[in-house]
Image (cartoon, rainbow, N blue to C red):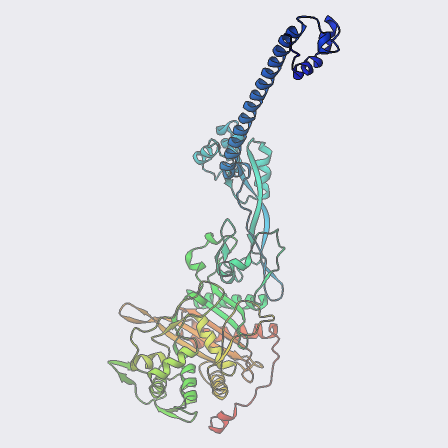
Length: 592
């Protein structure tokens, strides 16, 4: 009746052998076991096995619960971390993006015109401020220009970063540091400085508090100048300016403004072959280190942003067009005996010769009548086409944004062609006038003005006039200086060639005779022009020394002569012996 227990039960009992041994020896076989032993052993074995199994199940369940809890908690932490990453970054760092560094700017000779320096700026971590009101009052003792209410608001905001004051001086930094205020700290950031102060201010421009370009080269080439690396690691931006030439132009313009009580002035020195601007000045000027300390008028770039009717300087272009188009020669003659009446207007000469004039005489004596008749021979369409070729009808390209569009007449018929021929009815900037003049000086090529040193770049050149035409007009301009209205611009040894321009400014009811724009467009040396000098004065006044005259021959011309006298040696132009006029002038019998 007693069956042998399952082998599995014996295995279980064997694992608990010390307990069994305490009660007696384990039988060697089933037949050796005493009666009732098998039942006792089976009951004992089942109870122990069930208990062990229940324990293991409970432990497994508990472990599974802990694992699930850890997984859920971990996922939640990860979710919150990713969701708060931008906010955590903002709280941990004073500024989310790095400071803007800018490459240095130099002139063509390596003189530093603009560079970055590291300066301290003051900020607050409001979470660390202990006594906001006391902290504010303490800061006001050394920084009295701060607004108390705003400052207290910043100190109580709970924000991790707020600027209190940017770009402190060394003494201010030391005074704030000595206060030892919790939550108040400094961060070094780049500040743009201009070592030459006002010199070339309108070319350089300036930046805002965040070192972003606002005007001039700083804005026009902002993408090139901006850096994100350390200070001054980038190669400098090299301008075409020569600061020796720039200083001379600025000083002579300032002297002319004072002498003739002019409202403003502009001056340009241009390499006629490459288009490189060696000097560009506009007065009044300002200090780019503190641009807002000056008014809008001082920050206005007269040389590139203002447009004027340039008066008789346009006569050289009319002569060039007539000669190039073949509608006139140097011996062509125009009747200037009587004023010219057209469309209800009367064109007369300021210095009337009251006779027939050749083309050179028209230019030399600045005859409006002769020039207007020359323009009629050219024709409306051909006149406009040539002016466009010379760049006088479109906005010129330059590396600064402050460049004006020309003001063209709404309708352009014969009367407009006649008045534009002598500089009324089309308003252009001094920059445009200089660029067009360079095409006459360099043998007939239009060049694009540039404020960047050419270095290895090739200049943009486009032929717009025949070489002989350009050379003949330079000879005419030389005669204007040697025998005509530009005599006060002559500089012995440098063969100055040029043309005066005097224009009345428009006002209510017509042109104002008491408000003049005077200019002098010149090139030198006339035998082989290398540089162009343009001087413009806005509303110059007559003086005792000018015998009551306020025209260009008495103010703009001598100012240009003074500039050439000073800059020619700097530019490496050697004095030459005065040459004979060109063959066309000789053939025309115009040598006196």
